[in-house]
Length: 192
Image 1 (cartoon, rainbow, N blue to C red):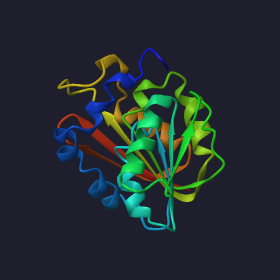
Image 2 (image 1 turned 30 degrees about the vertical axis):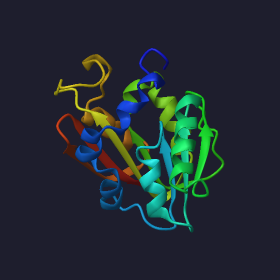
Image 3 (image 1 turned 30 degrees about the horizontal axis):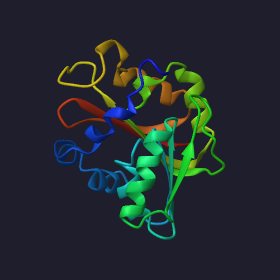
């Protein structure tokens, strides 16, 4: 996965004002039904764009597991969590490409701008989906291959219909696809 991976030297780009205004992470997570008390697994958490607002939402009775393969990103996330007093709600998890390194099942699992980087997509999904509870919410946010504005090369991007098919094969139901911001789509469903 290393050739397609977002480089940690560009981590400041993840918290730009433009990105915060466009995606509105706290609002988006709430709209997607992340709730107080949930176990939220943020796969490819990076430096916390979704983990930090997720920790606010799940509260003291919930937990966020911020999973990433890049230790630099996780260290930045840890620092950001310390700055806002959320370290008790966020557990940092260093993973490998196809090994989640988790011991907790999720109520809500997010893969934001990550799946296009994954080389062994089937193996990756099988590994992470083993950490879903029945009824868990699963959310992917990905770059739309039909829009070029910014992001990874078009040939790295995953079409929403292809991703939907992969989710259906893994008993994800009630799948919805919607366009978000100017160059991304969101796909969500529930584990049955």
